[in-house]
Length: 397
Image 1 (tube, rainbow, N blue to C red):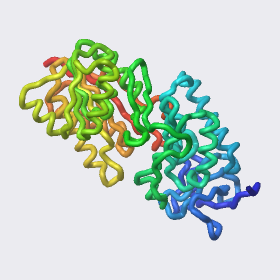
Image 2: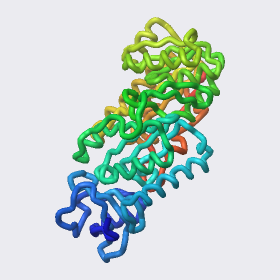
Image 3: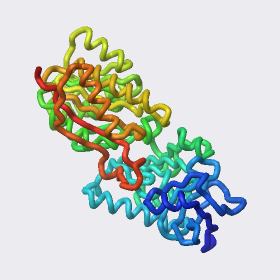
Image 4: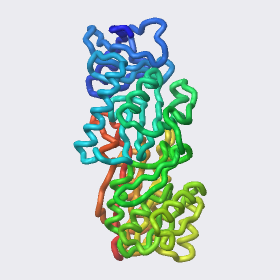
């Protein structure tokens, strides 16, 4: 490997963006681009005056043409990737998560490796490589992960729209090691079976862990509705906190069956029931038959994947929370969240305010949450900040 990379210049706008700390530059803001630059190539970035602005991966076929990986001039070596991984692990250790065997170990831009997601589930690592620049160092990255963690299996889930936008084919399957794609994990004393082959995203939703803990602390003696239950995380934490019973609902029958198996794994099947049904329709049915809950949990999937979908997403948040409030007992608790990055906190809270007004409910906020430290949020990169979580008490009339 050469000790020199080719240089790419950026416009005034691109320079300002990088100096602000944001790692992305769009195609229109590149200048002095070398001929024959291949998708995923690493390059040194230069200002209009030739000043170094760091190292980035380049993909001229993507809307985000440049993704900076370092403010310094570096090379795409195993040593560089190993340092990035060690730094990420140190940050998690400082946050008290160093001994966890169920956590996100690499979080894309949040850990200065744009397009890399790596989650640890016991002795299994589940990895997504979503950008051309990280695809170019795929083998080195897998080497580093394998050497550091010594997992029995590294399973790759490099799939979805992100790969397509980068001009990359999807890839799914074992990348290193062997054995079953299923692993059992335990978080806060609650057990889950994770299938990295067929589970959501990399196999499980790790980002709600601390928010589940908030729900657990509020659940004692309550009848609970776990809406959009996925693998059953919120409902099982509620049962661990002393909830009397949980009704879990998800559109996906596979998700409900996974949650059912996790309820059995924790020995709480007698207090857990699940239904595979559209939650909007299920809430209407529950409202109409007069069934009420002391704790309603709403953890919907992202309602918008593009800017064009934001208005529809806001309507979705207003509607689902209004309907959740319709089956919540007076004095009960609503725990609600949004993982739609394109919807900001202010907009989401406004949608909740509209939902409460439509439901004729007075809500008192009693808890607030977001992403755990293994999903680090960078102040200069708002795209790293996506998860919003709030708990409200429905005041007595």
